[in-house]
Image 1 (tube, protein in one colour):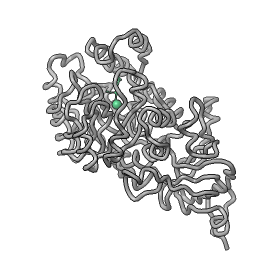
Image 2 (tube, helix red, strand yellow):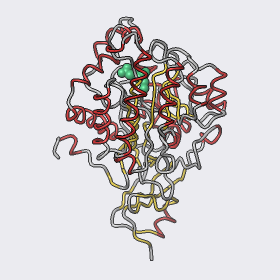
Image 3 (tube, rainbow, N blue to C red):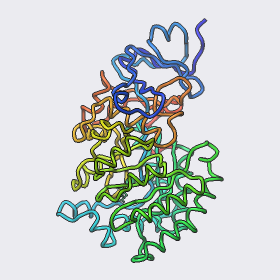
Image 4 (tube, protein in one colour):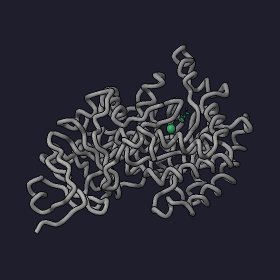
Length: 431
Ligand code: NIG
Ligand code: FE
């Protein structure tokens, strides 16, 4: 008697499982775990079995089946770096930059992150939820099933806590890992007094953020809570970044770091030394620090949509990182200033063209490695027995079309925790 299941997806031309026993490096990044004529069995929101269709269909039956003939099934994407909660836009700055203004000069003049801070401070919690929800829904439609979201547009204790509450409200509907980025920029109240602002982050914001986390849904779900810092010339230097991250670690939180986006300040070495789960951007990272990253457990998260959007810094040397043996992940960095990008497939398309990742490497970097960059590698990021059933059905004959084709959405069906997502409601706005 075949065993009964909640859902069976069968006869996929390719199932790419991305399976692996940890974050992938080197040659392992070329292995997408391809199963031809594949099938997946889902029970209670989890993967119960994966294999060839004839074997699976002989062992399982289900009232709900999806025929994926001529299609590809892959894991849902994990976007390991977003700033998805903000208000307003920066379309005027987009024009200024086209005219030659530099991103960091706009910030130094009180625009950039600070202009988004002003809009975000003014916005109500409800408005921020509404706006972020629309963004996450768009990203889900494009295949992202797990999101990291950072605070960082409040830059005062009250607003940073408001952003944490917004993230928790969003988590009722989307799978999220939260990150506290109080040290994202120096707010106008502390202009010229960066060390005092760092003191505020450490003495007031971090303890309150931790208190919030302990009582949050995220702690209940057993998810990590990370601390991040924008380590950059004119923002937080290496020692200030160290102080914030060490304070977070002392409170039992995890560490991430924005490093080397415009200037190499030694942030990668700092992140590795502190055992950060990831270090992100890495556009200007020198070879000896890439080597140090490769010898560590820290994941290098590269964000090519930023280079595409700003056009001012070279793409991170992700090829060199992989060749050196580093575990590399890709993410959108969704934010209104440096990357108004919702699409992991676009990020993969850029990584293949400008960073010379092969499609297999790009896919592993957006799934399993990205999951490990959030401490979620045991739950999501690959199609393996016991993991959450977060899958995509692609309207393509080969997974490489995800990177090869550009500018339209190949994701036909999104399955999150075993539930086929219905996007009609989002179009009509009906509850
Ligand atoms: O990751 N670099 C700092 N933070 C963001 C940009 C935020 C913004 O411009 O609003 C980033 O690129
Ligand atoms: Fe960022």
